[in-house]
Image (cartoon, rainbow, N blue to C red):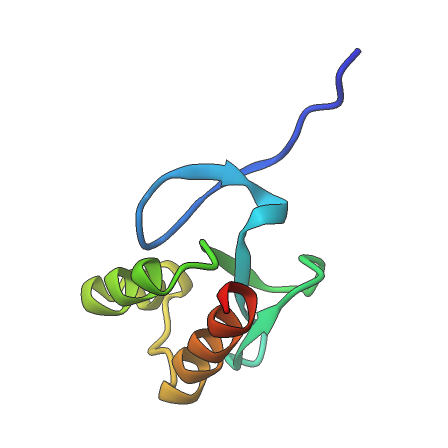
Length: 89
């Protein structure tokens, strides 16, 4: 029997994709927001495609802020943008 692949929704384009393909942004118990590349960090998570366009859409709509129930610091957005450049370029 085929093992089920976990699906998550991108906060930018709203498409459902395999969890492994997405970048996880996590809010820890202390309220800090960070990037989680292993997908195992404790806390509330939200997902984004590794695509700068999805990041722009998520920033514009404040989707990550709503999903994680916290204001996302600018440094987190900058780190996400850098990470996406590294993966694409």
